Length: 309
Image (tube, rainbow, N blue to C red; front, side, top):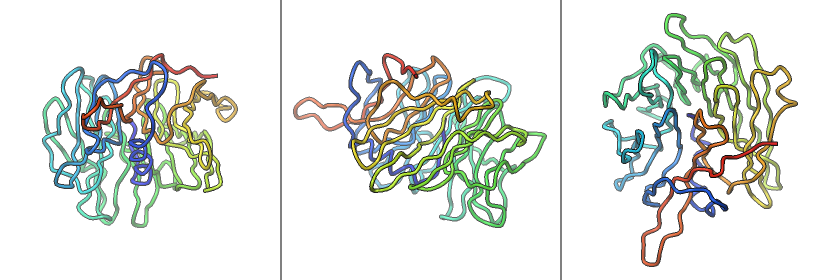
């Protein structure tokens, strides 16, 4: 998790130019910098992200457990793929949801099952004349945005319960947990983050960011764990750095209980937050190559785990 639209990809690419995190943060693995790894997502020991191939197309890269990363056996993408990793219905290994576009305004949600090595279109949420994007999945349910047509907004699909609109705001990034959907909407200048219950009856405003050339903050994609929503807040227009914010989405007064990480990370990071342990985050950023070595993009993990105050 999480999933998002194309706008935040600019930030993910910018991460490749950011300095490596300081302190004791640890490199998990390294990829060629030319592959431009981006849109990192993780759940239950499975990682997924996008990489650029030599022919200019983009591939879905999957790493399961301690195995080697590999391109999923699915057709290539014309733009960076934005995966979400979530638990499957009935338990078992995680699955990966993402949008695939036949044309810029013709996109549908697909699911890749790493255990079976198979891609499947999620036909239940495909609607003629509408483009679906920014999907996230949780035990067979999907939250996603409809970005074109007469029914723009952000929706939740549940097997056996159909599809309901959670908000008229069109998500640029989402995540889905067992109680709430986290929905980030807006543009590069102003973004709003909400948590909406599966029933659609409870909406909690988590925060709003404003950014300009002169300064401000810009929110990044959300990640839900059992109790918390996490997201990146990037300072713009000055000493650029990223803080990580979190809030207990079960509380009614969530806007008053937002906690900020006690240390900052390099600006522009595309963070992935696993369910456990708390405060552990992953991101791609350059490693420092030895002399004569090709530049590489490293997958880092926070160590020690982030704390919040």
